[in-house]
Length: 295
Length: 144
Image 1 (spheres, each protein chain N blue to C red):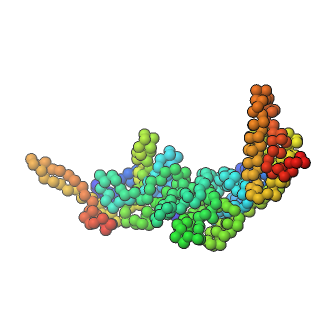
Image 2: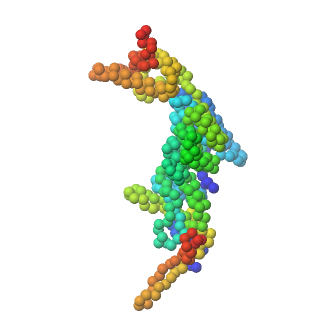
Image 3: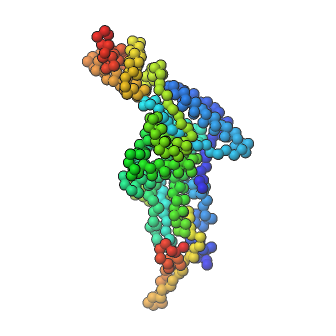
Protein backbone atom coordinates (compact mmCIF):
# COMPACT_ATOMS: atom_id res chain seq x y z
CA UNK A 1 0.00 0.00 0.00
CA UNK A 2 2.60 2.48 1.01
CA UNK A 3 4.85 3.69 -1.74
CA UNK A 4 7.55 4.94 0.55
CA UNK A 5 10.85 5.35 -1.16
CA UNK A 6 13.52 4.92 1.51
CA UNK A 7 16.33 7.35 1.14
CA UNK A 8 19.50 5.59 2.13
CA UNK A 9 23.03 6.82 1.86
CA UNK A 10 25.50 4.63 -0.03
CA UNK A 11 26.93 1.79 2.04
CA UNK A 12 30.51 3.05 2.03
CA UNK A 13 29.54 6.20 3.94
CA UNK A 14 27.53 4.29 6.49
CA UNK A 15 30.28 2.81 8.63
CA UNK A 16 32.14 6.09 8.83
CA UNK A 17 28.93 7.97 9.45
CA UNK A 18 27.91 5.66 12.29
CA UNK A 19 31.29 5.95 13.96
CA UNK A 20 31.14 9.72 13.67
CA UNK A 21 27.62 9.76 15.02
CA UNK A 22 28.43 7.67 18.07
CA UNK A 23 31.48 9.79 18.80
CA UNK A 24 29.30 12.89 18.62
CA UNK A 25 26.83 11.35 21.05
CA UNK A 26 29.60 10.53 23.50
CA UNK A 27 30.76 14.11 23.35
CA UNK A 28 27.36 15.72 23.81
CA UNK A 29 25.71 13.35 26.25
CA UNK A 30 27.27 12.55 29.60
CA UNK A 31 26.69 9.04 30.94
CA UNK A 32 23.57 7.29 29.60
CA UNK A 33 25.52 4.14 28.72
CA UNK A 34 22.41 1.95 28.07
CA UNK A 35 20.99 4.59 25.72
CA UNK A 36 24.18 4.89 23.73
CA UNK A 37 24.47 1.12 23.59
CA UNK A 38 20.97 0.89 22.14
CA UNK A 39 21.70 3.50 19.52
CA UNK A 40 24.89 1.65 18.58
CA UNK A 41 22.86 -1.55 18.21
CA UNK A 42 20.30 0.12 15.96
CA UNK A 43 23.11 1.57 13.88
CA UNK A 44 24.73 -1.84 13.55
CA UNK A 45 21.41 -3.32 12.51
CA UNK A 46 21.15 -0.79 9.72
CA UNK A 47 24.57 -1.63 8.40
CA UNK A 48 23.81 -5.36 8.54
CA UNK A 49 20.46 -4.85 6.84
CA UNK A 50 22.20 -2.94 4.08
CA UNK A 51 24.74 -5.71 3.61
CA UNK A 52 21.97 -8.32 3.57
CA UNK A 53 20.01 -6.37 1.00
CA UNK A 54 23.14 -6.28 -1.13
CA UNK A 55 23.16 -10.08 -1.14
CA UNK A 56 19.47 -10.24 -1.89
CA UNK A 57 18.44 -11.30 1.60
CA UNK A 58 15.12 -9.72 2.33
CA UNK A 59 14.91 -7.89 5.65
CA UNK A 60 11.73 -6.73 7.34
CA UNK A 61 11.78 -3.04 8.15
CA UNK A 62 12.73 -3.07 11.82
CA UNK A 63 10.35 -1.74 14.41
CA UNK A 64 11.95 1.33 15.88
CA UNK A 65 9.26 2.54 18.23
CA UNK A 66 10.83 3.36 21.54
CA UNK A 67 9.87 4.02 25.06
CA UNK A 68 12.12 6.15 27.22
CA UNK A 69 11.60 5.70 30.91
CA UNK A 70 13.52 7.21 33.74
CA UNK A 71 13.49 9.59 36.60
CA UNK A 72 12.99 13.30 36.07
CA UNK A 73 15.89 15.06 34.44
CA UNK A 74 17.68 12.01 33.07
CA UNK A 75 17.70 13.31 29.52
CA UNK A 76 14.70 11.56 27.96
CA UNK A 77 13.51 14.59 26.06
CA UNK A 78 17.03 15.60 25.07
CA UNK A 79 17.77 12.16 23.63
CA UNK A 80 14.43 12.03 21.80
CA UNK A 81 15.24 15.33 20.15
CA UNK A 82 18.56 13.93 19.01
CA UNK A 83 17.03 10.64 17.98
CA UNK A 84 15.16 12.14 15.04
CA UNK A 85 18.37 13.43 13.51
CA UNK A 86 20.15 10.19 14.28
CA UNK A 87 17.51 8.04 12.60
CA UNK A 88 17.60 10.22 9.54
CA UNK A 89 21.35 9.91 9.27
CA UNK A 90 21.02 6.18 9.67
CA UNK A 91 18.53 6.17 6.80
CA UNK A 92 15.58 4.99 8.87
CA UNK A 93 13.69 8.22 8.81
CA UNK A 94 13.05 10.03 5.55
CA UNK A 95 12.70 13.59 6.80
CA UNK A 96 14.20 13.42 10.27
CA UNK A 97 11.90 15.99 11.82
CA UNK A 98 10.46 15.66 15.29
CA UNK A 99 6.89 16.39 16.23
CA UNK A 100 6.62 16.68 20.00
CA UNK A 101 3.14 16.33 21.42
CA UNK A 102 1.42 15.73 24.70
CA UNK A 103 -2.04 14.45 25.53
CA UNK A 104 -3.63 17.79 24.68
CA UNK A 105 -2.57 17.56 21.04
CA UNK A 106 -3.96 14.08 20.54
CA UNK A 107 -7.09 13.80 22.61
CA UNK A 108 -10.17 15.84 21.77
CA UNK A 109 -12.75 17.53 23.94
CA UNK A 110 -15.89 15.87 22.71
CA UNK A 111 -17.11 12.82 20.82
CA UNK A 112 -15.68 12.63 17.30
CA UNK A 113 -12.99 15.18 18.04
CA UNK A 114 -10.19 12.80 18.95
CA UNK A 115 -9.75 10.82 15.74
CA UNK A 116 -9.20 13.81 13.44
CA UNK A 117 -6.87 15.41 15.95
CA UNK A 118 -4.77 12.30 16.40
CA UNK A 119 -4.68 11.66 12.66
CA UNK A 120 -3.60 15.21 11.96
CA UNK A 121 -0.70 14.86 14.37
CA UNK A 122 0.23 11.51 12.85
CA UNK A 123 0.16 12.97 9.37
CA UNK A 124 2.41 15.81 10.43
CA UNK A 125 4.86 13.35 11.99
CA UNK A 126 5.01 11.04 8.95
CA UNK A 127 8.53 10.60 7.68
CA UNK A 128 9.94 11.64 11.02
CA UNK A 129 9.60 11.00 14.72
CA UNK A 130 6.53 11.46 16.86
CA UNK A 131 7.54 12.19 20.43
CA UNK A 132 4.80 11.76 23.01
CA UNK A 133 5.91 13.25 26.28
CA UNK A 134 4.30 11.92 29.45
CA UNK A 135 2.48 9.34 27.38
CA UNK A 136 0.74 7.77 30.37
CA UNK A 137 -1.65 10.71 30.48
CA UNK A 138 -3.10 9.40 27.22
CA UNK A 139 -5.01 6.81 29.15
CA UNK A 140 -6.96 7.64 32.26
CA UNK A 141 -8.33 4.46 33.76
CA UNK A 142 -10.28 6.35 36.40
CA UNK A 143 -12.51 7.90 33.75
CA UNK A 144 -14.11 5.29 31.56
CA UNK A 145 -15.52 7.87 29.19
CA UNK A 146 -12.11 9.33 28.56
CA UNK A 147 -11.34 9.82 24.87
CA UNK A 148 -7.68 8.90 25.38
CA UNK A 149 -8.41 5.28 24.55
CA UNK A 150 -9.49 6.29 21.05
CA UNK A 151 -6.21 8.11 20.47
CA UNK A 152 -4.31 5.06 21.75
CA UNK A 153 -6.10 2.79 19.27
CA UNK A 154 -5.38 5.03 16.29
CA UNK A 155 -1.76 5.33 17.36
CA UNK A 156 -1.41 1.58 17.67
CA UNK A 157 -2.86 1.01 14.23
CA UNK A 158 -0.48 3.42 12.55
CA UNK A 159 2.49 2.21 14.59
CA UNK A 160 1.80 -1.29 13.33
CA UNK A 161 0.92 -0.58 9.70
CA UNK A 162 3.23 2.27 8.82
CA UNK A 163 6.43 1.36 10.53
CA UNK A 164 8.57 2.60 7.70
CA UNK A 165 6.85 5.98 7.71
CA UNK A 166 6.89 6.84 11.36
CA UNK A 167 8.85 6.24 14.53
CA UNK A 168 6.98 6.80 17.77
CA UNK A 169 8.88 7.59 20.95
CA UNK A 170 7.02 7.57 24.22
CA UNK A 171 8.55 9.13 27.28
CA UNK A 172 7.61 9.19 30.89
CA UNK A 173 8.46 8.23 34.41
CA UNK A 174 9.06 4.55 34.79
CA UNK A 175 6.37 3.48 37.26
CA UNK A 176 3.63 5.37 35.48
CA UNK A 177 4.68 4.07 32.07
CA UNK A 178 4.57 0.54 33.44
CA UNK A 179 1.06 1.06 34.68
CA UNK A 180 0.15 2.55 31.30
CA UNK A 181 1.47 -0.55 29.49
CA UNK A 182 -0.40 -2.82 31.89
CA UNK A 183 -3.63 -1.12 30.89
CA UNK A 184 -2.69 -1.22 27.19
CA UNK A 185 -0.82 -4.49 26.68
CA UNK A 186 -0.86 -4.00 22.90
CA UNK A 187 1.16 -0.85 23.30
CA UNK A 188 3.99 -2.40 25.27
CA UNK A 189 4.44 -5.25 22.84
CA UNK A 190 4.50 -2.99 19.81
CA UNK A 191 7.40 -1.06 21.18
CA UNK A 192 10.63 -2.82 20.41
CA UNK A 193 12.98 -0.70 22.44
CA UNK A 194 12.33 -0.03 26.07
CA UNK A 195 15.21 2.13 27.14
CA UNK A 196 15.63 2.92 30.79
CA UNK A 197 17.51 6.09 31.60
CA UNK A 198 19.62 5.55 34.71
CA UNK A 199 20.15 8.24 37.31
CA UNK A 200 23.38 10.14 36.93
CA UNK A 201 26.23 9.58 39.35
CA UNK A 202 27.73 12.47 41.23
CA UNK A 203 30.67 12.49 38.86
CA UNK A 204 28.47 12.59 35.78
CA UNK A 205 26.41 15.42 37.22
CA UNK A 206 29.61 17.40 37.71
CA UNK A 207 30.50 16.87 34.07
CA UNK A 208 26.98 17.90 33.07
CA UNK A 209 27.33 21.04 35.17
CA UNK A 210 30.63 21.82 33.46
CA UNK A 211 29.01 21.37 30.02
CA UNK A 212 26.07 23.56 30.97
CA UNK A 213 28.31 26.28 32.36
CA UNK A 214 30.40 26.19 29.23
CA UNK A 215 27.30 26.72 27.13
CA UNK A 216 26.17 29.58 29.35
CA UNK A 217 29.61 31.17 29.18
CA UNK A 218 30.44 30.78 32.86
CA UNK A 219 33.02 28.82 34.81
CA UNK A 220 33.59 27.66 38.37
CA UNK A 221 36.74 28.63 40.18
CA UNK A 222 38.32 25.76 42.12
CA UNK A 223 36.58 26.36 45.49
CA UNK A 224 33.26 26.77 43.69
CA UNK A 225 33.67 23.40 41.97
CA UNK A 226 34.36 21.76 45.31
CA UNK A 227 31.38 23.54 46.83
CA UNK A 228 29.16 22.44 43.98
CA UNK A 229 30.21 18.84 44.47
CA UNK A 230 29.22 19.11 48.10
CA UNK A 231 26.03 20.82 47.03
CA UNK A 232 25.17 17.89 44.74
CA UNK A 233 25.76 15.34 47.49
CA UNK A 234 23.38 17.17 49.77
CA UNK A 235 20.88 17.92 47.05
CA UNK A 236 20.72 14.25 45.99
CA UNK A 237 19.76 13.25 49.51
CA UNK A 238 16.85 15.65 49.53
CA UNK A 239 13.43 14.88 48.01
CA UNK A 240 12.47 15.82 44.46
CA UNK A 241 15.96 15.55 43.10
CA UNK A 242 15.63 15.76 39.33
CA UNK A 243 19.11 14.91 38.08
CA UNK A 244 20.30 17.19 35.29
CA UNK A 245 17.29 19.45 35.68
CA UNK A 246 18.21 20.10 39.32
CA UNK A 247 21.74 20.85 38.21
CA UNK A 248 20.47 23.36 35.71
CA UNK A 249 18.22 24.99 38.26
CA UNK A 250 21.03 25.14 40.80
CA UNK A 251 23.28 26.77 38.23
CA UNK A 252 20.56 29.24 37.33
CA UNK A 253 20.19 30.17 40.99
CA UNK A 254 23.95 30.47 41.34
CA UNK A 255 23.92 32.83 38.38
CA UNK A 256 21.31 34.95 40.12
CA UNK A 257 23.44 35.15 43.27
CA UNK A 258 26.50 35.87 41.17
CA UNK A 259 24.61 38.65 39.41
CA UNK A 260 23.46 40.31 42.61
CA UNK A 261 26.97 40.03 44.05
CA UNK A 262 28.60 41.58 41.00
CA UNK A 263 25.84 44.12 40.45
CA UNK A 264 26.99 46.46 43.24
CA UNK A 265 30.37 46.94 41.62
CA UNK A 266 29.38 46.45 38.03
CA UNK A 267 31.40 49.43 36.78
CA UNK A 268 34.70 47.85 37.78
CA UNK A 269 33.79 44.25 36.85
CA UNK A 270 36.15 42.67 34.35
CA UNK A 271 35.64 39.70 32.08
CA UNK A 272 36.76 37.21 34.68
CA UNK A 273 34.50 38.56 37.42
CA UNK A 274 31.55 38.50 35.07
CA UNK A 275 32.05 34.88 34.05
CA UNK A 276 33.31 33.19 37.22
CA UNK A 277 31.06 31.63 39.83
CA UNK A 278 32.76 31.52 43.22
CA UNK A 279 32.10 29.25 46.20
CA UNK A 280 30.04 31.92 47.90
CA UNK A 281 27.45 31.77 45.08
CA UNK A 282 27.00 28.06 45.67
CA UNK A 283 27.22 27.99 49.45
CA UNK A 284 24.37 30.48 49.86
CA UNK A 285 22.01 27.70 48.76
CA UNK A 286 19.25 26.43 51.00
CA UNK A 287 20.75 22.92 51.14
CA UNK A 288 23.64 24.27 53.20
CA UNK A 289 21.34 25.92 55.72
CA UNK A 290 21.75 23.26 58.40
CA UNK A 291 25.54 23.46 58.37
CA UNK A 292 25.60 27.22 58.27
CA UNK A 293 26.74 27.70 61.92
CA UNK A 294 29.99 25.80 61.55
CA UNK A 295 30.63 26.95 57.95
CA UNK B 1 -16.74 8.48 -28.97
CA UNK B 2 -14.19 11.07 -29.95
CA UNK B 3 -14.97 13.59 -27.22
CA UNK B 4 -14.40 11.12 -24.45
CA UNK B 5 -11.62 8.92 -25.59
CA UNK B 6 -11.73 5.53 -23.88
CA UNK B 7 -14.61 6.76 -21.77
CA UNK B 8 -12.20 8.27 -19.31
CA UNK B 9 -12.70 11.53 -17.53
CA UNK B 10 -9.92 13.90 -18.51
CA UNK B 11 -9.76 16.62 -15.89
CA UNK B 12 -6.79 18.11 -14.12
CA UNK B 13 -3.16 17.20 -14.58
CA UNK B 14 -1.93 13.90 -16.02
CA UNK B 15 -5.45 12.92 -17.05
CA UNK B 16 -4.40 11.73 -20.51
CA UNK B 17 -1.80 9.47 -18.94
CA UNK B 18 -2.55 6.07 -17.48
CA UNK B 19 -3.69 6.32 -13.85
CA UNK B 20 -0.88 7.30 -11.53
CA UNK B 21 0.54 4.61 -9.30
CA UNK B 22 0.95 5.27 -5.60
CA UNK B 23 4.67 5.79 -6.12
CA UNK B 24 3.97 8.40 -8.78
CA UNK B 25 1.37 10.09 -6.60
CA UNK B 26 3.92 10.16 -3.77
CA UNK B 27 6.45 11.82 -6.04
CA UNK B 28 3.92 14.48 -7.03
CA UNK B 29 2.96 15.06 -3.41
CA UNK B 30 6.62 15.37 -2.54
CA UNK B 31 6.88 18.13 -5.10
CA UNK B 32 3.88 19.96 -3.66
CA UNK B 33 5.19 19.69 -0.10
CA UNK B 34 8.60 20.89 -1.22
CA UNK B 35 6.89 24.08 -2.35
CA UNK B 36 5.04 24.42 0.96
CA UNK B 37 1.66 23.87 -0.61
CA UNK B 38 -1.18 22.55 1.51
CA UNK B 39 -2.77 19.45 0.07
CA UNK B 40 -6.42 18.48 0.16
CA UNK B 41 -8.23 15.32 -0.89
CA UNK B 42 -11.60 15.84 -2.60
CA UNK B 43 -14.23 13.54 -4.03
CA UNK B 44 -17.37 13.82 -6.12
CA UNK B 45 -19.75 11.77 -8.20
CA UNK B 46 -20.71 14.73 -10.36
CA UNK B 47 -17.75 15.13 -12.69
CA UNK B 48 -19.18 17.95 -14.82
CA UNK B 49 -16.24 20.15 -15.83
CA UNK B 50 -17.94 23.22 -14.35
CA UNK B 51 -18.37 21.49 -11.00
CA UNK B 52 -15.38 23.18 -9.42
CA UNK B 53 -16.16 22.56 -5.79
CA UNK B 54 -15.84 18.92 -4.89
CA UNK B 55 -16.42 17.63 -1.39
CA UNK B 56 -13.37 17.71 0.86
CA UNK B 57 -12.41 14.46 2.47
CA UNK B 58 -11.37 15.52 5.94
CA UNK B 59 -9.50 18.74 6.47
CA UNK B 60 -6.92 20.21 4.15
CA UNK B 61 -3.49 19.16 5.36
CA UNK B 62 -1.22 21.95 6.44
CA UNK B 63 2.30 21.73 7.90
CA UNK B 64 3.02 18.27 6.54
CA UNK B 65 6.60 17.26 5.84
CA UNK B 66 6.17 13.86 4.27
CA UNK B 67 3.69 12.53 1.67
CA UNK B 68 2.99 9.33 3.61
CA UNK B 69 0.30 11.09 5.64
CA UNK B 70 -1.51 12.29 2.53
CA UNK B 71 -1.25 8.88 0.92
CA UNK B 72 -2.85 7.45 4.04
CA UNK B 73 -5.75 9.89 3.62
CA UNK B 74 -6.06 9.06 -0.09
CA UNK B 75 -6.37 5.36 0.64
CA UNK B 76 -8.93 6.09 3.35
CA UNK B 77 -10.92 8.09 0.83
CA UNK B 78 -10.65 5.31 -1.75
CA UNK B 79 -11.95 2.85 0.80
CA UNK B 80 -14.84 5.10 1.78
CA UNK B 81 -15.77 6.08 -1.80
CA UNK B 82 -14.64 3.25 -4.06
CA UNK B 83 -16.86 4.45 -6.90
CA UNK B 84 -16.30 8.18 -6.84
CA UNK B 85 -13.84 10.46 -8.52
CA UNK B 86 -11.11 11.45 -6.08
CA UNK B 87 -8.64 14.20 -6.76
CA UNK B 88 -5.74 15.73 -4.92
CA UNK B 89 -5.35 19.48 -4.97
CA UNK B 90 -2.33 21.41 -3.77
CA UNK B 91 -2.96 24.96 -2.59
CA UNK B 92 -0.45 27.77 -2.66
CA UNK B 93 -0.95 30.47 -0.03
CA UNK B 94 1.80 32.81 -1.24
CA UNK B 95 -0.67 35.49 -2.28
CA UNK B 96 -2.58 35.38 0.98
CA UNK B 97 -5.27 33.09 -0.33
CA UNK B 98 -5.27 29.42 -1.09
CA UNK B 99 -4.73 29.10 -4.83
CA UNK B 100 -4.82 25.66 -6.45
CA UNK B 101 -1.46 24.94 -8.03
CA UNK B 102 -1.84 21.24 -8.76
CA UNK B 103 -4.89 19.11 -9.18
CA UNK B 104 -5.09 15.57 -10.44
CA UNK B 105 -7.31 12.52 -10.21
CA UNK B 106 -6.12 9.70 -8.00
CA UNK B 107 -9.15 7.45 -8.25
CA UNK B 108 -12.04 7.00 -10.65
CA UNK B 109 -15.14 4.78 -10.85
CA UNK B 110 -14.73 1.43 -12.57
CA UNK B 111 -17.29 2.29 -15.21
CA UNK B 112 -17.43 5.78 -16.63
CA UNK B 113 -20.34 6.28 -18.99
CA UNK B 114 -19.13 9.70 -20.15
CA UNK B 115 -21.05 12.79 -21.24
CA UNK B 116 -23.80 13.61 -23.68
CA UNK B 117 -23.95 16.80 -25.71
CA UNK B 118 -27.42 18.30 -25.66
CA UNK B 119 -28.42 20.77 -28.35
CA UNK B 120 -30.99 23.38 -27.66
CA UNK B 121 -32.79 24.96 -30.62
CA UNK B 122 -33.14 28.67 -30.06
CA UNK B 123 -34.61 31.62 -31.98
CA UNK B 124 -33.26 32.20 -35.46
CA UNK B 125 -31.82 28.71 -35.85
CA UNK B 126 -29.30 29.36 -33.05
CA UNK B 127 -28.15 26.28 -31.22
CA UNK B 128 -27.13 26.17 -27.57
CA UNK B 129 -24.90 23.35 -26.43
CA UNK B 130 -24.65 21.83 -23.01
CA UNK B 131 -23.02 18.65 -21.76
CA UNK B 132 -24.36 16.36 -19.12
CA UNK B 133 -22.85 13.30 -17.54
CA UNK B 134 -24.87 10.15 -18.19
CA UNK B 135 -24.25 9.16 -14.60
CA UNK B 136 -25.96 12.22 -13.12
CA UNK B 137 -29.36 10.96 -14.20
CA UNK B 138 -29.41 9.03 -10.94
CA UNK B 139 -29.47 10.52 -7.44
CA UNK B 140 -26.26 11.33 -5.60
CA UNK B 141 -24.51 8.28 -4.20
CA UNK B 142 -26.07 5.87 -6.73
CA UNK B 143 -24.36 7.20 -9.82
CA UNK B 144 -21.44 4.87 -10.35
